[in-house]
Length: 251
Image (spheres, rainbow, N blue to C red):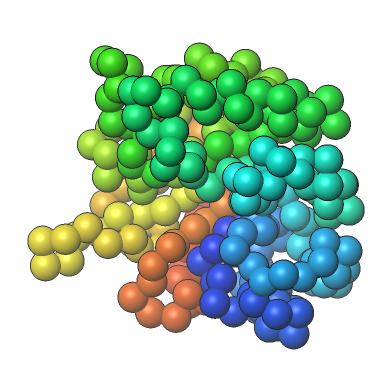
């Protein structure tokens, strides 16, 4: 498994071409060799690719606007071709689908795009938060996704932090989704003054040696470090996570 950086962590430093280039330089200097494109500024795909190539960074997955996946999928696929990226990710299900009356509409609406992505040799990827573990008609929201899409139509970017926040067993869900987890998010959880906070990997309370072993058995290819909120400089958080995971033999 390869270790990477989810750029959402440093989104504030990626909003124009110059800052993006400087940030990719810093990411590469930490040691990362793969990245996920997420929440960056309006920078053309060919420029993004050129900058990442210059620092030896492979673009493995994105988070792409759900509206574009639904209504502009041909151009989305072309942009991913330019970036040599095979995983087209959605950061979260739009809110309008999260009810008993509308949950079935998500697969109905996005199936055509999922099939077009698959036909292009890529895979539609879904990233979870905690709400996917709410129940609708005695099933988790995430169950509607696993049942609504075949493995070659949707993979899952399982996020360790959000599974834990939802009160679920991270390893159990890795095992349930085995074979559908090519790219995942590593994110730790620590308690401060009675509240849960995101933390650099292996500096919180999650059992990452056990979790990473489960990902390996599940066929995961890319482990992307993500920390949505940081109590110190986001680059320092990315570096701490990298150094901790390198001690386990990953880079």
